[in-house]
Length: 151
Ligand code: ZN
Image 1 (cartoon, rainbow, N blue to C red):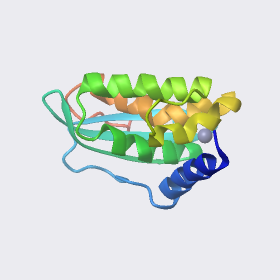
Image 2: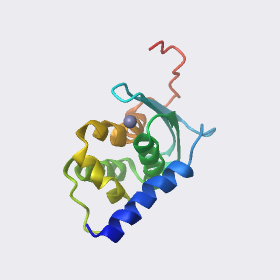
Image 3: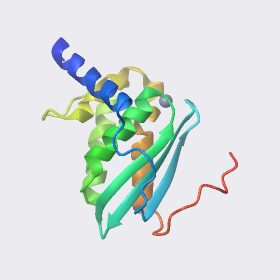
Protein backbone atom coordinates (compact mmCIF):
# COMPACT_ATOMS: atom_id res chain seq x y z
CA UNK A 1 0.00 0.00 0.00
CA UNK A 2 1.36 3.41 -0.84
CA UNK A 3 2.15 5.85 1.94
CA UNK A 4 -0.61 8.17 0.71
CA UNK A 5 -3.18 5.42 0.91
CA UNK A 6 -2.00 4.41 4.40
CA UNK A 7 -2.40 8.02 5.45
CA UNK A 8 -5.86 8.17 3.91
CA UNK A 9 -6.97 5.04 5.73
CA UNK A 10 -5.60 6.26 9.04
CA UNK A 11 -7.64 9.38 8.49
CA UNK A 12 -10.76 7.24 8.04
CA UNK A 13 -10.24 5.60 11.45
CA UNK A 14 -9.36 8.88 13.17
CA UNK A 15 -12.37 10.56 11.64
CA UNK A 16 -14.77 7.85 12.82
CA UNK A 17 -13.29 8.12 16.31
CA UNK A 18 -13.65 11.84 16.40
CA UNK A 19 -17.10 11.94 14.87
CA UNK A 20 -18.80 8.56 15.34
CA UNK A 21 -21.64 8.04 12.88
CA UNK A 22 -25.07 6.78 13.96
CA UNK A 23 -24.10 6.70 17.61
CA UNK A 24 -26.72 6.37 20.34
CA UNK A 25 -29.89 4.37 20.85
CA UNK A 26 -32.16 4.14 17.85
CA UNK A 27 -35.73 4.90 19.03
CA UNK A 28 -37.24 3.06 16.06
CA UNK A 29 -35.14 -0.09 16.52
CA UNK A 30 -36.92 -3.43 16.44
CA UNK A 31 -33.75 -5.46 16.92
CA UNK A 32 -30.87 -4.97 19.32
CA UNK A 33 -27.84 -7.06 20.17
CA UNK A 34 -25.02 -6.63 22.61
CA UNK A 35 -21.41 -7.33 21.81
CA UNK A 36 -18.70 -7.81 24.35
CA UNK A 37 -14.96 -8.22 23.88
CA UNK A 38 -13.60 -8.94 27.38
CA UNK A 39 -10.02 -9.39 26.18
CA UNK A 40 -9.89 -5.66 25.46
CA UNK A 41 -12.84 -4.35 27.49
CA UNK A 42 -14.86 -3.24 24.45
CA UNK A 43 -18.65 -3.07 24.59
CA UNK A 44 -21.01 -2.45 21.72
CA UNK A 45 -24.78 -2.43 21.36
CA UNK A 46 -26.19 -2.40 17.86
CA UNK A 47 -29.73 -1.20 17.16
CA UNK A 48 -31.47 -2.13 13.93
CA UNK A 49 -34.68 -1.02 12.38
CA UNK A 50 -35.46 -3.90 10.09
CA UNK A 51 -38.00 -3.45 7.34
CA UNK A 52 -38.62 -6.98 6.09
CA UNK A 53 -35.17 -8.18 5.17
CA UNK A 54 -33.64 -4.74 4.82
CA UNK A 55 -31.79 -2.62 7.37
CA UNK A 56 -33.78 0.59 7.22
CA UNK A 57 -31.83 2.25 10.00
CA UNK A 58 -28.97 1.31 12.28
CA UNK A 59 -27.07 2.75 15.20
CA UNK A 60 -24.53 1.65 17.76
CA UNK A 61 -23.60 2.64 21.25
CA UNK A 62 -20.62 1.48 23.19
CA UNK A 63 -17.28 2.09 24.75
CA UNK A 64 -13.84 0.70 24.31
CA UNK A 65 -10.70 1.10 22.27
CA UNK A 66 -10.41 3.31 19.20
CA UNK A 67 -10.42 0.37 16.79
CA UNK A 68 -13.65 -1.08 18.19
CA UNK A 69 -15.50 2.23 18.18
CA UNK A 70 -14.27 3.38 14.75
CA UNK A 71 -15.08 -0.01 13.27
CA UNK A 72 -18.61 0.01 14.73
CA UNK A 73 -19.17 3.54 13.40
CA UNK A 74 -17.96 2.58 9.93
CA UNK A 75 -20.02 -0.61 10.07
CA UNK A 76 -23.24 1.38 10.56
CA UNK A 77 -22.50 3.49 7.48
CA UNK A 78 -21.79 0.35 5.44
CA UNK A 79 -24.87 -1.63 6.52
CA UNK A 80 -27.56 1.03 6.34
CA UNK A 81 -29.95 0.16 3.52
CA UNK A 82 -28.50 -3.31 3.03
CA UNK A 83 -30.36 -6.63 3.10
CA UNK A 84 -29.37 -9.33 5.59
CA UNK A 85 -27.59 -11.27 2.81
CA UNK A 86 -25.69 -8.16 1.69
CA UNK A 87 -24.71 -7.48 5.29
CA UNK A 88 -23.30 -11.01 5.67
CA UNK A 89 -21.35 -10.64 2.42
CA UNK A 90 -19.90 -7.32 3.59
CA UNK A 91 -18.89 -8.85 6.90
CA UNK A 92 -17.11 -11.70 5.08
CA UNK A 93 -15.20 -9.12 3.05
CA UNK A 94 -14.33 -7.10 6.16
CA UNK A 95 -13.28 -10.24 8.05
CA UNK A 96 -10.93 -11.20 5.22
CA UNK A 97 -9.42 -7.70 5.26
CA UNK A 98 -8.72 -7.68 9.01
CA UNK A 99 -7.46 -11.28 9.18
CA UNK A 100 -5.29 -11.30 6.04
CA UNK A 101 -4.60 -7.64 5.32
CA UNK A 102 -5.72 -8.35 1.77
CA UNK A 103 -7.42 -5.29 0.39
CA UNK A 104 -10.53 -5.38 -1.74
CA UNK A 105 -10.12 -4.58 -5.41
CA UNK A 106 -12.29 -1.51 -5.16
CA UNK A 107 -11.28 1.37 -2.91
CA UNK A 108 -13.34 0.95 0.21
CA UNK A 109 -13.30 2.50 3.65
CA UNK A 110 -13.33 -1.06 4.98
CA UNK A 111 -9.70 -1.35 3.85
CA UNK A 112 -8.81 1.24 6.48
CA UNK A 113 -8.69 -1.71 8.87
CA UNK A 114 -6.27 -3.82 6.79
CA UNK A 115 -3.43 -2.97 9.18
CA UNK A 116 -5.27 -4.75 11.99
CA UNK A 117 -4.12 -8.14 10.68
CA UNK A 118 -0.62 -7.44 12.00
CA UNK A 119 -2.12 -7.18 15.52
CA UNK A 120 -4.11 -10.43 15.87
CA UNK A 121 -5.33 -9.51 19.37
CA UNK A 122 -7.11 -6.50 17.86
CA UNK A 123 -9.09 -8.45 15.27
CA UNK A 124 -11.82 -9.03 17.88
CA UNK A 125 -11.94 -5.27 18.47
CA UNK A 126 -12.47 -4.63 14.76
CA UNK A 127 -15.16 -7.28 14.33
CA UNK A 128 -17.09 -6.66 17.59
CA UNK A 129 -19.67 -4.27 16.13
CA UNK A 130 -20.14 -6.46 13.08
CA UNK A 131 -20.81 -9.53 15.23
CA UNK A 132 -23.39 -7.58 17.21
CA UNK A 133 -25.06 -6.39 14.01
CA UNK A 134 -25.24 -9.90 12.55
CA UNK A 135 -26.61 -11.22 15.85
CA UNK A 136 -29.24 -8.50 15.81
CA UNK A 137 -30.18 -9.51 12.25
CA UNK A 138 -30.67 -13.11 13.33
CA UNK A 139 -32.25 -12.31 16.69
CA UNK A 140 -35.79 -12.05 17.92
CA UNK A 141 -38.02 -9.30 16.67
CA UNK A 142 -38.54 -7.88 20.14
CA UNK A 143 -35.79 -5.68 21.55
CA UNK A 144 -33.57 -7.67 23.85
CA UNK A 145 -33.01 -6.24 27.26
CA UNK A 146 -29.52 -6.02 28.60
CA UNK A 147 -30.73 -5.07 32.05
CA UNK A 148 -30.58 -8.65 33.32
CA UNK A 149 -26.90 -8.82 32.45
CA UNK A 150 -24.81 -8.87 35.57
CA UNK A 151 -21.41 -9.52 34.00
ZN1 ZN B 1 -10.45 -3.19 21.64
